[in-house]
Image (cartoon, rainbow, N blue to C red; front, side, top):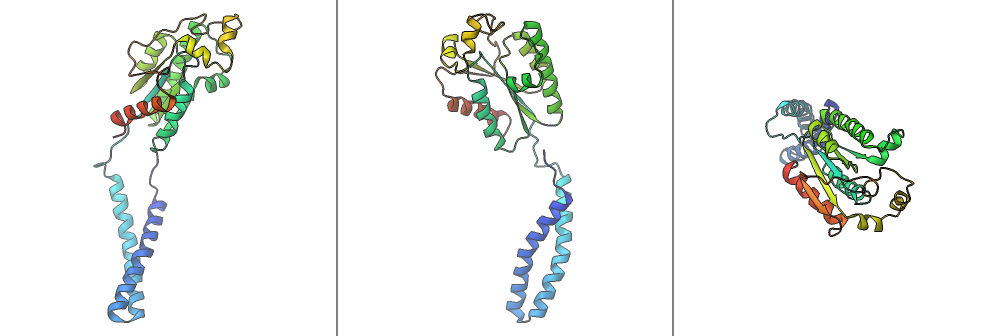
Length: 241
């Protein structure tokens, strides 16, 4: 969120007066053919109108009429590993940034890199989701929206997020396990099937599909660009009008 400072208002006034004063000097000189009179009129006008412009600008800054606050929202991407969450969320985040929305990007990998001791049991994951919900709360208190991508396989943890944050938008990226395996450039599904990774959603742990997702996208049918466009249209319709 940006605030118009006094120095910025003054700078804008000066830049405008350079153009306006030059015009005034030109007009006075054209009609009276006196350069001294034209310059004097231009200087007097400059001093007076810079002050008037500053006062006018600051007065309008205090007027709330005609301004609409963008309520902070949370885009919560959920789905099986390799369903396309990070890829699509990154595309949406980039497009929303271009709209000058105060925004932060949260991804499961980045958070786990910061807190590497987080486990993958149901209890660990649910506790972790409460941490993320608390972080989003604090960002929203400062009018910052979030684009978050987490597997978040359990309904109770997604419910907790919905209850903790404002304007929560669940984006369920639907893809079956076989499709996700085909996209598995990291080999994590293979490792999970060998037992090297425990509590892996879709292999040796459950993924509970959302029952109340605002947006459902079948990534077996829609491309990443198409999915991002669908989500952007939803945001523009409900939050950025």
